[in-house]
Amino acid sequence: MKNKNFIKLTFDIFIVLLFTLLYNVRVFGGLAFHEIAGLGIGALFIVHILLNSQWVIKVTQRLFDHSLPGKTRFGYFLNILLLFSMAFTIMSGLMISKVLFPGFGGVNGRAFRGLHSSVSYLSLALVGVHVGLHWQWIAGLMKKVFKVKSSSTVSVVAKIALTLILLLGGVQVLSTQFSSNIALITTNLSANSEQIQPDGLTGQFDKNIPTGKDGRSPGHEDGKGGNANSTGVIITFLGVIGGIAVGTKYLEKQIMKKALKSLTQELEL
Image 1 (cartoon, rainbow, N blue to C red):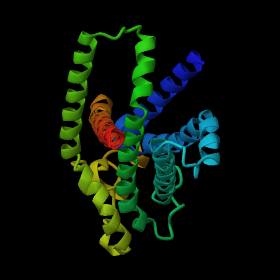
Image 2: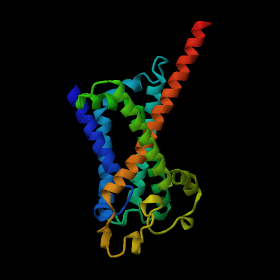
Image 3: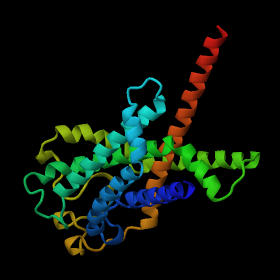
């Protein structure tokens, strides 16, 4: 069981790392990698669900059971929302494909560009919350892997690390205009195709990136080429995910404290 959990954690870390690379279309050759990796993420996400199928089945069966913890029920619906947002991002990506399926979205591909970017940022936020909800499980498994024993020193170091992650996440959220990109979902839903920029993607996908014909970088035919620093992209968007995850963890902790305080007061009465 321990080996299985370690394999699942390693697999999930790989998914997250690959996922972050999708937020810049110029890593590892440009659009070709972006589109292939995007489809790959879809397949890996399905595998992730299958690996956790027992949990999904058990929670589904008890979904309306009052004894089911609120956190578990919230996580279940969060996962459904994440599934839909991922599916939409992949489908809209197919509609605006310029390398793998250049003619797939010929009907009205432009209308999907803004939504593709905005919903992908929503997916990023949901991944952060998902990680935050599983923080204790991740931390416990990491302790076992690296054989870290609990102590006051470890506790202090962990708190400092969490604070730094939260600060880094906050900086990255601001630098990527994260909130504004998610807020554009409503705008993009109501906008007609003429109001959505016809070339390239929106938000961080093409921020400060000069584009040529069909939204490709100048000098890179068929989406080939690209010079974005993959390490920088990973750090940036891991920072966003980490910041949201830590924020979720602290929020959960505060909710639990408040619930425990209310329960204690009721018992005293």
